[in-house]
Amino acid sequence: MANKVQNDAADFDVIIVGAGFAGIYQLYHLRNRGYNVRLIEAGSDVGGVWHWNCYPGARVDTIGAIYQYSDPILWKDWDYSEKFPAWNELREYFNYVDSKWDVRKDCKFNTRVTGATFDDEHNVWRVQTSTGEMSTCRFFILCTGFAAKPVIPDFPGRDSFKGEAHHTGLWPQGGVDFKGKRVGVIGTGASAVQVIQEASKEAAQLTVFQRTANLTIPMRQQKISKAENARLKEKYPEMFATRARTFAGFEFDFLPHGAMEVSEEERQATFRKVWKTGAFNWWLGNFNDVLVNEDANNAQYSFWREETRKRIKNPALHEKLAPTNPPHPYGVKRPCLEQWYYECFNQENVTLVDLKEAPLERITETGIVAGGEEYPLDVIVYATGFDAVSGGLVAIDIKGTDGRSLREHWANGIKTHLGVASPKFPNLLFLYGPQSPSGFCNGPTCAELQGDWLLKFIEDMDQNGIKRVEAKPDAADAWAEDTKKIIDMTLFPRANSWYLGANIPGKPREILVYPGGLPTYLDTVNNVAAKGYSGFALT
Ligand code: N01
Image 1 (cartoon, rainbow, N blue to C red):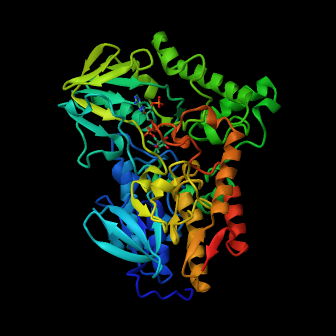
Image 2 (image 1 turned 90 degrees about the vertical axis):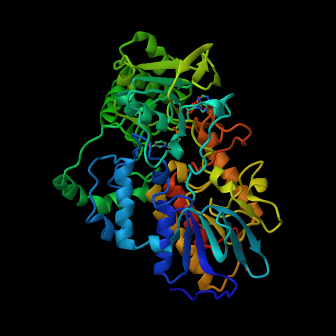
Image 3 (image 1 turned 90 degrees about the horizontal axis):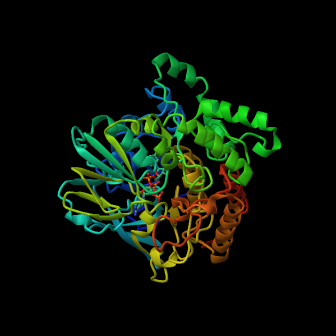
């Protein structure tokens, strides 16, 4: 390993927050490089988002083949049983990773990091936790993921409900029984779509409270046999290598031409072909202009609407679930993968309440009142989303060198250099965080590709005897400006999505993730490293 900077004031070289894909990757690889590492996790086990989101139907929207670490020590003996594995299989995967990488021994579970201050004199972070402990470290890496801060809107009467009520992101570890019950789901985002599909099979009555139709994509789920897994594995090395070359770190990319560059006949034929593949190929493996050109986007939407309407028996629901005019350009709110979502609404026991026509007024002891009508319920599912990307970070009271918190620093807009560090917060690093590819990249891919850059960054600092590294304000201003310029060239600003923080009242409207694609991001950060880490003050 590099010559490690000795700092007697530090209990650990590195403290990591979060035991998901990113945190565990850092833990394992830093430890292998001789660093003394502690990982702190609020949950009771490893798994990150898959620990918290254990609601019925929760499953990943990236194919399992690349939704894992690329270390052959792991994948050669690991088989997912489905193309898009469910949360419980993903938890088994994390158990398996621990059996090979032995990570749990350096994790402190059931412990929330509550605050941190930088000791200027000794160049260490003092990290406080919910258990009242304080530890010091030279580098402090936040791997809290994009969904660490679940949000339940302040519906009037919310606390009066006498039945069971749960947010999807804080689902009880022991599960919730829907059988024979009257279940209400608020929201129709990705979490809701997954819960609705399962609840429709068990609930006596399922009521879905929809504000905006979800422009979903067929998942095209498949079981994968052992023999198929073995065949697939021959392609794994190439698939893993491909991730760094594609916009969102997938095994596929946008087509090399635009929808408006081809004839109507070819356009429809291509849409049909990509639709058959389904999954995110329909979103990020489609014509390369669908997210930037309104005509291309409308053509994609029209195809989607017609295909979707074929599955909805009640014509009155066509306009609700697949409206004539899109609620926003297609794909600029993150679409989700569905399996039998529309068929649910053909069932007698499933009702859709359109909150645009019948606004949600209040929650009572016994149900939800919308549009003047009370819907009696035994269970309420809040599938109302997250204060995404930055919410989990600013929830920790991290004080900068000027005594102001990260929340205060970012109150009018996030400032980071390359999405990895923020001015006034020396030796504090973000992985899969704001203004990095995060929300436009799948978890394990970013954990590895952005994670490898961070590992080298820390090693290079040590190699050069650097005790303190801090993002420069002008570099952070320029990075925020770059992310804005890129997103303004697309149709994304036309929706109130979590990508823009627009689902949280009062949150500044700005793109929370780097929208230039993974290859451009990697080129940029590698160039910065090659130039001796330009934009960082090194002392
Ligand atoms: O949250 P969301 P999510 N009154 O913010 C509605 C990932 N994910 O947990 O659209 C009424 O998308 C809101 O309505 P509207 C994935 O990246 C992945 O579902 O704002 N309704 C919306 O319908 C995803 O994008 C998987 O009008 C209110 C819903 O609540 C991200 O997590 C599975 C409301 C929130 O949808 C977040 O998804 C699950 C109000 N006051 C999640 N406030 C995979 O498949 C909000 N809503 C891997």
